[in-house]
Length: 314
Image (cartoon, rainbow, N blue to C red; front, side):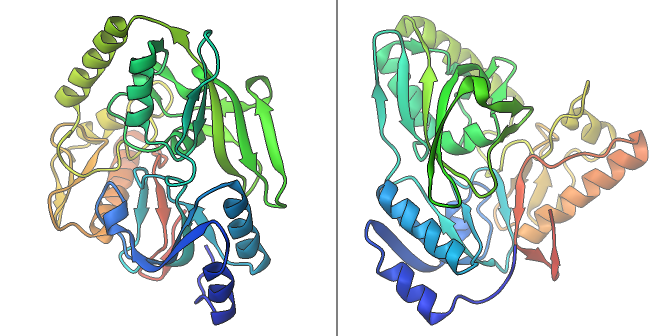
């Protein structure tokens, strides 16, 4: 991500956009599930599609970097922050609507997953129970094809709608989408703003029972009560990242207040005052040790944003 200060003219353009709320120099520690991260140049909150389109076009025309913040549950932002605009869809794109009796549901990308699951329970719609306990927003979950052994977003997606870099809108059916492990392929710089799910009418009790079982499993196996970004690494083919990290002897190891969880080794938790650099040090350590011991190169599931010691990381 290119680093440069935001000039006055660009600030003025953003400040006067219709349908966009702007906050300047926002520290992201309060907006990420890891509770770490320095400031971004601005946090943009589009209130409607026109506002989102305007904001993205201004940023692109000024060659200024931006990223979709979501719920901040799958990112690690550097302690020094980043000269970029963060875009939150939570305020303008959090509607959920049942379209018919069959179970088709239209959902804004900014809707928190927990609210979507609550809606499904109220409406008696099954198919999304696997999101129980997963933090984050609908859009973020789609972009990374979030899921568990019980299902994934690709299984229930019927259509996605997104904004292209040139300002055009696209509606793409499931049959034309390419989902893979922890990924949905979209055009470069596309901003996903809405999705239609195809769900299955079911009894509330059946949905509740499945949700309860999944939540109990998560509470037993994962560090439920500590700040984390969920799984740090993707599972390599035929194995589990957590098993490899534990077998390398790293379970419970700390750098500052960051710790490879004693409960699940593919989670890095913030014990209170961790810094992003502490978390990154554990990421590097886990990668190095697992490669040395097993010859497996762990791939990040979370996104690293910003610079650490002057070095941009992918």
